[in-house]
Image 1 (tube, rainbow, N blue to C red):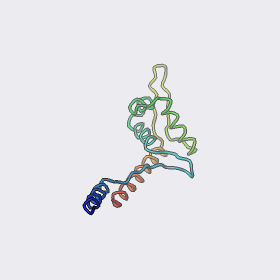
Image 2: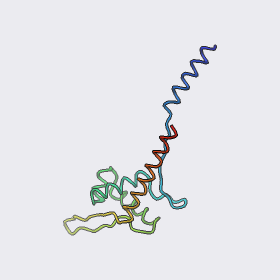
Image 3: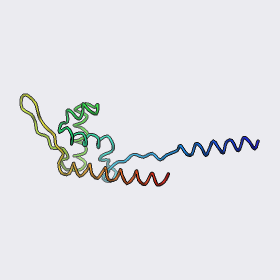
Image 4: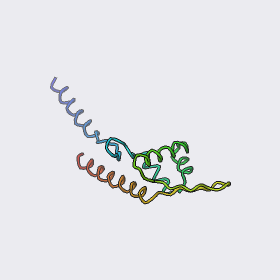
Length: 123
């Protein structure tokens, strides 16, 4: 009987070494979520591609969904995050993050780094 208890204790200790913290980061105003990992990815990709269409293609969501995520963030914040310019008949429009949009990315990244460092200290 004692061997069975010792074996269980060894198993429990081994199992505990594999348990790590997990988390999701959301920026919010009050109870209204503004941005998590998915929306961060949208903004970060727009900052590289300067295109909502290309961003949607790269992260495998529809153009409309991408636009809707941006609009929802802008509506909740009350400010423009992505400035768009329509293309002519041949297309060729562009999308650029506003100063606030770039600041939002930096804030998310800063918080993410702090959370990750704190999580590592807890392990």
